[in-house]
Amino acid sequence: MSPSRPHVLVIGAGTGGLCLAHGLRRAGVSVAVYERHRARTDGLLGYRVGIGPTGSRALRECLPPELFDTFVATCARSPAYFNVITEKLRQTASFALRPDTDPLGTDRSVSRMTLRQVLLTGMDDVVHFDRTCVGYEQHDDGAVTARFADGGTATGDLLVAADGTHSAIRRQYLPHAVTRDAGTINIAMKIPLTEHTRSLLTERILHGISLIFANGGVMGILHVMEFKWDTTGRPRSGIGSADAELLGHWPGLLYDNTRDYIAIVVWSATRRFPADIMRRRGEDLVQIALELTRGWHPHLRELIARSDPGSCLPVKVATSEPVPPWKPSTVTLLGDAIHTMTPGRGSGANTALRDAALLCRQITAAANGEKTLLDAVGTYEAQMLPYGFARVADSLKDNGTNGDDALYRPVVGRLALLGARGYFGVVSRVPRLRQRFVDEIYAYRGAPD
Ligand SMILES: Cc1cc2nc3c(=O)[nH]c(=O)nc-3n(C[C@H](O)[C@H](O)[C@H](O)COP(=O)(O)OP(=O)(O)OC[C@H]3O[C@@H](n4cnc5c(N)ncnc54)[C@H](O)[C@@H]3O)c2cc1C
Image 1: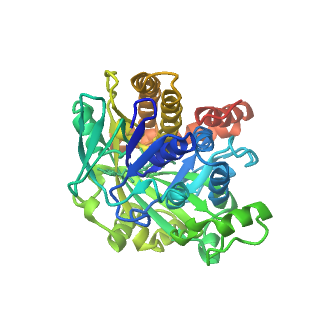
Image 2: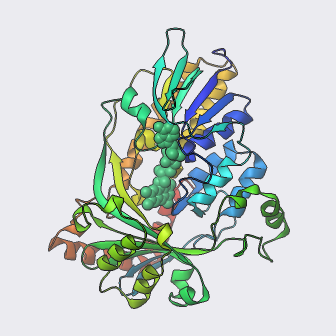
Image 3: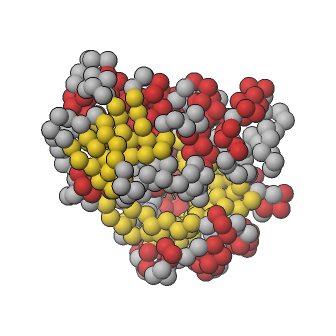
């Protein structure tokens, strides 16, 4: 180990940690990733993640080119519309999204499990599973040692906490940093896409992302995820020879049983759920979702009833409070470990990827002798903190992920619901407002004009 050719320890093989590890390895910087899951197939319950231009740019910067192409090939068909619907399946607004022609300029629908398998590709010698980090020590000579639950240790020049919302490293390094419950709970469900389930949805809903503003303080989102492989995991005919070739020899599908599905997430204020919701699983969660959606259109309820119980997941939505800058050292943080945000603007994974690319650039500059490692960490943190916590603040605004939202109040909630539906309805009907709305979505997600 030497400060000019640093060895980097990354805790957490999630979205941000793995993207950083790829980038460092490509730049010739020594890196090891430690992950608490026992194997690459663990922890794969999940939902759709929207990767926008910010996330795609970071992935293209850090991943080997062929793996970036594999990422693109493994995304689901991109949504063509953003719809706002009622719980009775009445469409109150629909916006045409940009066509999926540019690999960087679009918003991609990604299965969380598949993204994880893409990011784990070719990393067998870098990722160490079944290593739960429990703390660290910083030494006078500039080295830093991570301690693991199995009693082992690993020593390097920089320790990167990429260990998500409940980061053990953040708790030790920044004990004053606060993550808190946002006051809402999601139930995420996956329903196999079949001819029958397809027939329950309208064309616009089948080809779009649909936000459900329901009466009674419950919200939902519905995505249809269609991939380039069939039910046996083989590339479909007609996807193009380049994608067929990439998918044909990509080993990730051996570990990933993702097939076409409809993703539905329903959410509401925490008080609407049983106190032990986070311990509930499977059919129990389906029943709770059906209870919450009483009065919804029979097609939506049928879809929920047809959820694969093994795919149902309760998610307690969390957020974080801004942390004032600190003096840079041999420990730093990225992604949810420092700026946990609600899924309200679909930015958590994109921001973790942005952090990874920025930190990778800085560490590489230090490895190339252009600056010290501490200057590199300082530059990264000075940029990451403002944009990270700006996204945290945005994620809580006007989208129902905040339990204090007017939507969840008894009388005001009804007015807030009418206001939200009315707003989207008007904006979608006036061409100039509609265009501005769509342009703003892409600008926010990092697309160039
Ligand atoms: C319902 C929902 C929908 C979402 N949708 C979107 C979306 O559309 N777009 C978007 O950008 N974001 C979305 N997000 C947010 C996104 O999933 C996260 O922000 C993103 O995954 C954070 O990446 P990360 O690398 O920081 O952490 P993670 O991806 O959570 O990775 C952390 C890793 O660290 C490991 N780990 C934890 N503790 C330890 C330990 N002590 N030792 C070793 N390993 C450890 C974990 O097992 C995990 O593998 C959504 C989130 C939710 C809840």
